[in-house]
Length: 116
Image (cartoon, rainbow, N blue to C red; front, side, top):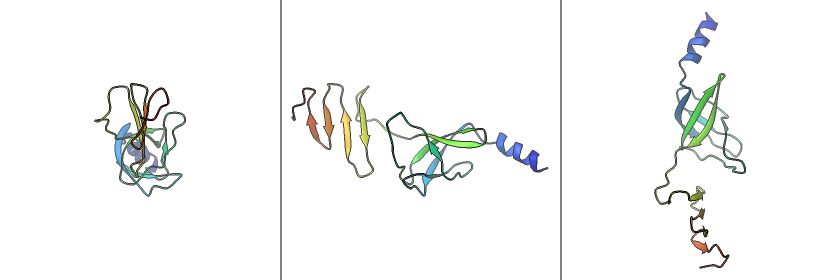
């Protein structure tokens, strides 16, 4: 009986789902979705590290009885195609622009290294 309930429970969890982050700390975060999970492991591009803030929309993948965070909802409204912007919760940012320049908290450095 218990085994059949577990199998049914596992089968009913979607492979991908969205949830909200909660109880975020430097090393882990809880996410409420179809099933609330504690200490979700997040995957990101190599070299990127982050501490997830609370109340962020998270995309979860379910595999082999465990959920993994694979991204957060983001908007790139102000970016041109191909640009990258890294933004902290405080509002501090680094913006890599298509023309080769970099903007750090409003200070623009041209592709030649000269501050504009």
